[in-house]
Length: 417
Image (cartoon, rainbow, N blue to C red):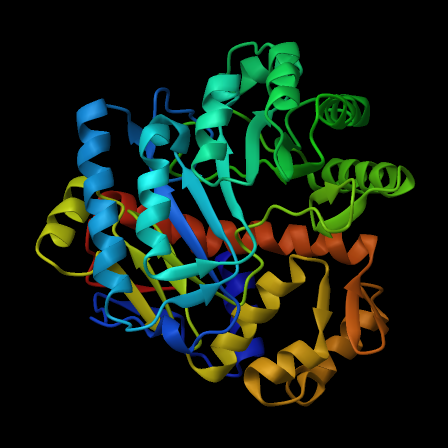
């Protein structure tokens, strides 16, 4: 898998040079020059550590959580205050972990961010099913949250057992959502679990919409090397058949496809912290993407708090992109939305997309991966599956290596991908 991604990287960047990360950081982060900037906040605490989850997380303790939030707010002011004017941004997303464990301080965090940023497209927050009750939802809504994403994974008890989840009260979730409405209610599911069928996945989607969701995300199970999950990945042929079948079902129902594996009842309903040109992250393990660099904060909660208390950014690793490297990153995550607009590429980079990747686009169209209309390239069903398939290689070759290292060392000296 490393060979395939390395070969692809060399071809698309036109160099054998790897993606090289160094233990360096800027005192003033260059987000002021970024258009369409989004914000992300990571809260790493969970009451139970699910063995299939790869994200940065630690066991919840009220005292540790409060100490961390204090440092988080300090980081927001530390980074934000180095720009004299409030920056207009698109959206703010809270991820984790289980952000609801810090529900009583979410408004405090939003207020800190609002001192430096003007948020124009709403605030999203991830929820564990156990946290979906009227009291919790009202606290979040009062704090300014407009979008929620509930990590259901599956309503089917057999898959809940596989994932180490307890049985949930779907009816109670539906009643709470009806009592406290949000602009977007997304529900996350995992597909490609052992023995999972089209009927299993379809019934999960139907139940989600019947309970009040207006958006669903169907993420593939990925077997990261550093997790302890005993789940076996589904074979490629079965996975493609399942993804194609559920995609056709959603499209036939009239749902809008927002990305490779997300669907909504209305075209303007969305929940995604990834498909953004630039973003600025706060908290341990949070990443930031700017015009010419990408950085990632330390995964270590204690090291994060110590660095912030010293008045320094919590950056662990930074890569300064070549132009071609930045183009690949832009194309990869833009394609996640299933569409790539040539005009948007040229506006961002100042060079036509066809001039840089005309041959690759011609090949992709010839293979039936893309269709082009008025300067927009859209993934076909075949193209969407192979995007997913390559994303799996990318994840295991790059993200798995990066996160695996970051979980062991607070501030690694160097990393090549």
